Length: 252
Image (tube, rainbow, N blue to C red; front, side, top):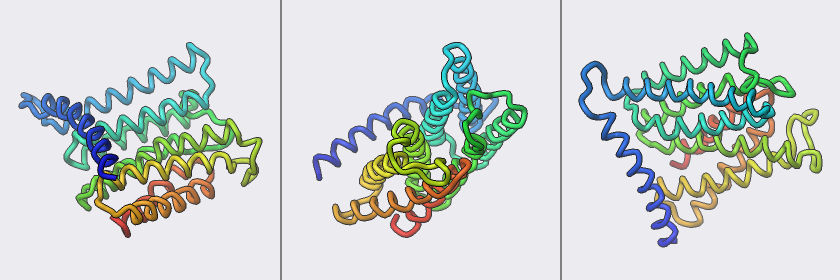
């Protein structure tokens, strides 16, 4: 256990070194703007570039909409996980998430970004994504615990994507629910990945005993998997992080 923790700490320390290099630039005195504003502008530009890249891949290489949606879901999620640590005030995150929400909402209504919004069934997930990201950031700031941001957003970024991937790949070979909108294969993929994520992040951010670590990870996995399974039309983008926050409230 000690060796595993040491390895995990080294991985997070490498991540911290990269982030510190970026911080050294952001925290330099700039003539016209604060580091928070500079980081917000950089993240907004990154988000816009990400939309352009996704749309280009969709049109140029004839990507299926499922693939382009997964691409922007994962890359956008990791952009938030990496970038938001450079913003100290939740107001800047609110502005950034609000702009992203408006862009996604308008493009959804106008049907101007099929690479992001085109689905086989009605889904509002792509529009809703910025809402839980901001909510988790706000909760983490007020609680003083980064886990309240990193765990729910990582589950939303990784596990939710794997659930969709697993459902598309193996869903027809397993049980399905809600008129084939959810599948056992997708839930299994979500559950396995969420357990691993919970185990790693709880392991890093808290000093739980081995049994407590496993039990808490299983509880979080079970509740978030149920939330993903029973929520339709993309609203699991809200219920997954909300259920993860509820579990963390009692254990973290």
